[in-house]
Image (cartoon, rainbow, N blue to C red; front, side):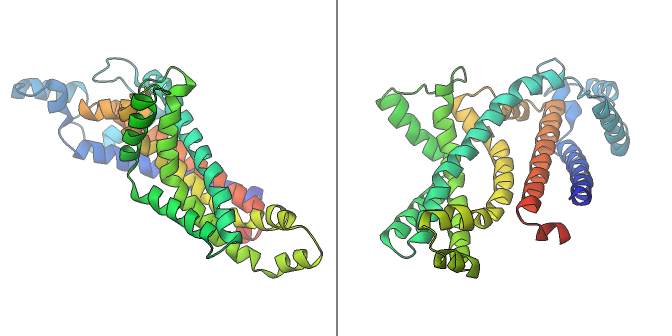
Length: 305
């Protein structure tokens, strides 16, 4: 298990480094940062001075090497728009996005796993069709549209929940539901397919033949194997939630990293965008690594493969 963990850790670091390099190149290829800093209508000599001041006239590989060296010391540079150090700025916003992503994933799992089990236990019944209909509805409806429906119902009509802000737990209810319901169908379908396959296996039939109760067979024997692909999908979906929170945070005015990303893109704040991409990619790669290790623990055959 230790050798497998070290191998996966090395691969994760390589992936994170590659993502940071691609993000660095992509951001600088999206436009001339010197013009963005100097402002529209700036003179050519002013733009050239800005280019020299920020080292943008150097080769890209040198700029990346310099940025990587500062990154190793925990220095993400200074924001061009907020005029402050990038690291504390991003770290201040990041918890809000992490809370939102975590609770959205939790909400998705809480509704999708029971529905997936029910659909597998009663295949081709009205229960199965109802669960699949809910899954189709969740996948077909964009999360921003669902978010607007939630606002109209719970904030405008019923006045139960605040429409914007991030001061209390109540501010996170509608964003959590909007994001969580969008990813729940993928989990529901995966649990349903996995449970149907596991429930037809020999060891489950043996467990039933021993006289175990249906609840014991499902929860103690079938569910563990059916959840193996769910763990891997959870890591992928959590990465999607971190990136997809930009729209939801903007709609609900949550003061998180997603809203900060929207502001940074609007003002072409390259250091902040680079830091956000790097931190989120590192978090995503770390989560994927944890999911791989959990899967290897659940199914020892993965360590051999």
